[in-house]
Figure 1: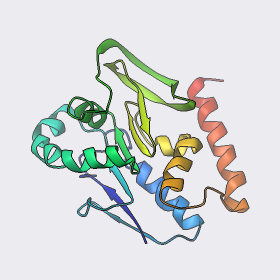
Figure 2: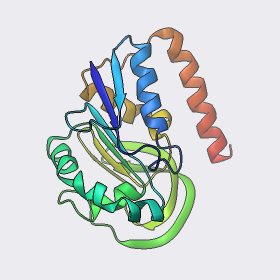
Figure 3: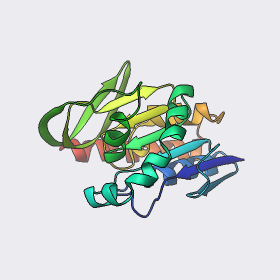
Length: 191
């Protein structure tokens, strides 16, 4: 059974980041794969999400974030399916060797497409840092907010593959998903 874990989802969900867990759960369901979601058993999970939190949340729960730093470092070392979003991306980039060192840059608030190696990823950025995306195997750390797994089939497939799940979606779900993704991108880009 696949274990999907999320860190303090009530607080680390500024821009709908918890939607990434919902996307994974739905994808597993469509493929007939059994799973369960947890916010208390982070260790040994097949996927771990740490979403974006407000400045107040980051300050209030800093010790809890520090407490999972070794776990996140191990997931980075092994390339295990992990998604750090927004302020979690910034928090762990400043603490973990192997993640990019972030530099201040002019604030950018826009839908954009960014790349990491050969991968192109679409999402919404609203911050003052210079690094939007880091990928090492199935470990993903990004400044792009919201349910990026819903908007980026390539990222979703990386996560599914790492969990040993087929990326082939049953035909009944495939055609609907393609139309939705096309509509989201068109609307966001104003075309």
